Length: 404
Image (cartoon, rainbow, N blue to C red; front, side, top):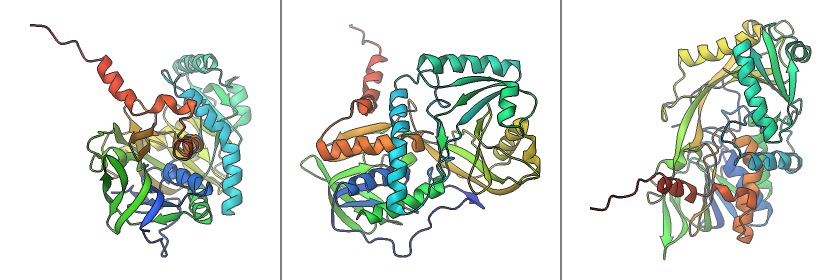
């Protein structure tokens, strides 16, 4: 099941010459979303024979439904102290990642560096924003407090009721459709294969080691299998002995068309209800709802109304903008909202559970998985995100047994 779309901002369609499943590969990657393709491209560039297997079209699920924000500061929340160094390292890696991706694919990804504004409307929101700012300052994040007039000087289209805000200069953005198209082309340029409309039905094992995958198109033997199937990683059919704590968290989003009459935005703008991201093609992405509905892709009147009302509350010009697309997607969310990385079984590596930070974390995830596969090394910044942490927490909360 894939995300539902109406007039969706397009990404790469299924290639009519989609690669055939090879018999052997050094690495088989399950899932052709942002994380799977980033990992595969990094490994193919290192000289490994890599095959990416996708049940549908590359990018279905979350990657083409996302907004493309690289928001280490704006996304920082209470309890995010462990994740923050991982986010900041990936934010640092995004510049070389962008340069190499654009050079090797020949495609621009609309990397925009205007920064992100987090705004407050009304006194209650100001107090909550001050609390967030204090958390960011304690974490050493580069964030500037702005008054309402200073915010509106940067974004004149915002309502006068915007009373304060934060400016996050290092929180940039990319266009997901362009990134996915570039990754697809760069992977093939590096010698990697992308096999679409091919479902992985089982892992093959020999002597306790994962040795490849069984698919609807045949068997692929591989030295290492990487599970990067997004929200589907926790489905349990492939590795029932792991019980991965990953679930889909549905989000509905829409694209509006900015015009000279409607005005628009130059920065990504966050409110307590929505975020709004201007893109190079003149569209304004408004997202995203947060819904625990399983894999139900349907768009709802309530969800779309919440997006429009949340945007209109801050930016009245949205009333003049044409709706050019609405869609839903599934964030791959772990039980602690942090990624799950590392070797889970001999021959099986996990790259899952990136929640709403997939675009931000793609470069560092690719580096971490490559370090593990190429050198057997766990990067220190990735060490806290192994699967074993969930078992350890479960034991911590298990009450002692009573002695009769």
